[in-house]
Length: 361
Ligand SMILES: C[S@@+](CC[C@H](N)C(=O)[O-])C[C@H]1O[C@@H](n2cnc3c(N)ncnc32)[C@H](O)[C@@H]1O
Image (cartoon, rainbow, N blue to C red; front, side):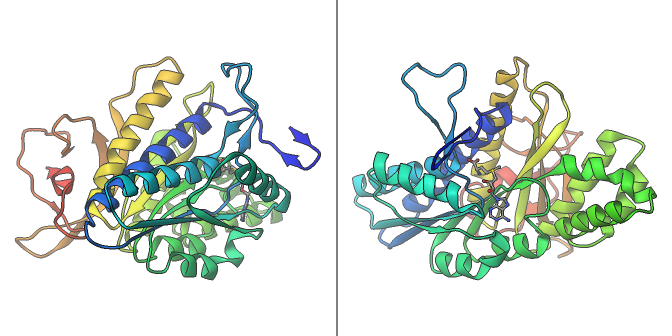
């Protein structure tokens, strides 16, 4: 929908509703944990929306008649940041917050600016960057310097987020990231691996850039007989590349409206065990919300995690990759739920949430 000077995205589909619910709950809990665990210190929060769009969606069929627009991630981000600042003040903490909105389409960004200026009394300051993400990575790093940062990386398709860009953002010292991994494009383009064409070569090169090299090609050829095995292998490969940066990663699939097929995976990365424990809960709730919107019961497999584990006994470092199953104690459970934990999380400090990453193998 496009009125003069206003860029509005079409009404949200289920995956977008779920993505926004996950963003809001992750951001709220992220800020809450940081504020509550830094008593007596100055807390600086930064939210970065790297592909923010206009922040406006057309209202859905279920919206009340007086609702003009539905909020996109940028509006959700600044509202949540404002709520965190209010929370900080209510508990007498010294908290500041700011947001950075990046988008390659300047008109969309202008719509966002006008909306925030007209409709919100924003306590958090914000800055707009009408650029492509790959051209402003240094600006993002400067913006996040000496801040706890939460970054959303959510473009259309795979070409906007080469690993060279994502890795720099994920590696920022105190950054948690929520990343759209556009699996469906990878899946569609796998057929080009066996064709000799210029068009195919271009697409395959985009996937090389997305996944940090051409290692995915051999994995795809090896697993292409089974859609499920293929998806797991490609996702594991991507999360493996992320975990080499020293972060823990976990993900849930976001599916098409009317099919079971995965459109993209939402991947969360953090260095903090508390951050990962919190994200695990939010992703689980997001999964349940997605199932409810589709009128289904949540499946048993909730999301995948990829966390570097170390065995304190032999000092060998290993990686743990397996489906994470719903489990009331919050432990990551393997097929054999009765066996003793063997690997311990080796991420950040031993603060709350560590027990969530004791592997039940
Ligand atoms: C899926 S929409 C994002 C929607 C927004 N994250 C939300 O959930 O409300 C993708 C947006 O990213 C912008 N975009 C795509 N590639 C980009 C890039 N390389 N750098 C910055 N913005 C980009 C597009 O203009 C589009 O508005």
